[in-house]
Length: 130
Length: 207
Image (cartoon, rainbow over all chains, first blue to last red; front, top):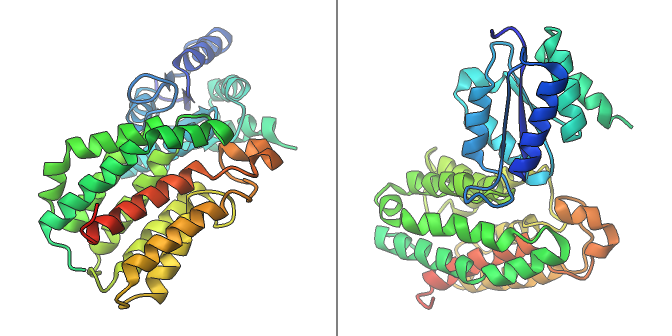
């Protein structure tokens, strides 16, 4: 099935990324593709552009992919990963400005209803609104 | 300041070795106002560059710079990967479009600086690597063609990094500290200074 937006969770910690993905799957079910990654290229705390690219491709959907990140480097590396995708996919991936756990759950819930990528992003980012 | 392939190779080697040697200092600086991983991240990235040094220096200069950029992007593991990576990717891209060294050095360096600014959505004055890169770019512009350009660049970088200490961070991890970021040299500015000075030293033949 590729008719729901995919969700990618990128944390500095693989444990946090996996835990967040587990929560999303429990709360939203398996109709939304969820991929996660965490850890630098040596496996320590940090993020890895190549792991993020892999996660985007794992969660790929024709409707696009929304990425949830924790701290600065995860965001910068996610933006870099998006730019390194094949051109046809770049415009269909967004990095959400939202808290990672709540944002992932909200985004996945919205995605499960068949919403567009822009709607999924907007719902996740409502959590960051002042 | 012509750049022969062997000169470029030794320049990259010296710069990478200097960054690797400065890793403990970068980590100490980053523990004060960041998350303490800048030294290990930069070390990982530049060790990867050293590991590919033969392949990198076998390329034409524009492709070599892009290869360095891509290597840093894929191996650093923190925000400094895309930041430094974008610098080298953009500099290599500038050289691919009818720019030539040494005449267009400031332009090429400027392309890299613009890419860092765009990637980090940041400007000079926010206690980041841009607080070294932007003054260095200014010196490259104003000092172009001067016989003491390399010495001027070294001095600019050394002074610029110290000026980050009294700044309050508004970008990056250090911004979480607000006023408590004042009094510490910025680790990214320091690593930029190390790189710039290593390149200068290599060009002066006294690494």
